[in-house]
Amino acid sequence: MILSRRISPFLLRSFRRGAAVFVLAAVLPACSSDEPETSLPDMPVYARLSLDDAQYTRLQNLGEFLEITEPRGAFTRIGVRGLLIVHSITPMDSSRPFAAYDLACPYCYTRSSRSPRPRVHAQEGGVSAVCEECGSRYDISSGFGGCVEGPGTQLQVYETYYSAASRVLLVQD
Figure 1: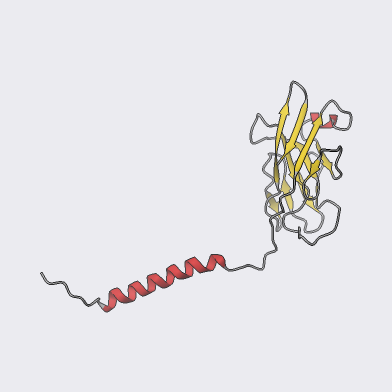
Figure 2: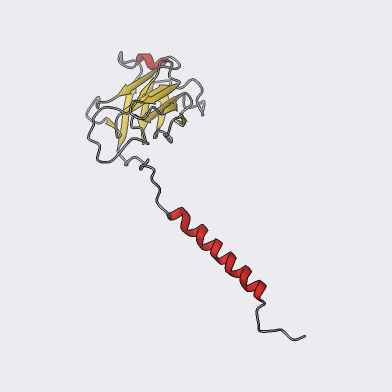
């Protein structure tokens, strides 16, 4: 059997089409979009809260929340715009009944923003938080922080550790 060194025109066209599709698929995701930057800068987060302390006792109840917009102690670090700590109604992990989020709306945040006020505020019952600027509504009841309404994406979630024996809640990045 003799093999021809010529490539059939059909195979050549198919190869060119396949190569064009491959190049487009590789290039298109790299294109920038008109969407605003939604990632927050890495900022240190550390808070140690004793739930026996009068200012934190309300966190003992399901659905209660606390917004921390100023550091409360020498070692407290509150992320980009502050911390939102929630005693989750339906935690993703039963061993972690508390959830912590950054108060910065990931959709509205810009690195040049100088506004010291928080961007999202929890609603009564600890089920959702709403951005005062774009109106995005975030689910804060489970520890995920996903956007359920509006242009937002997902709130920045921080790790929480709770010791029932000492009634101390630790929040960190």
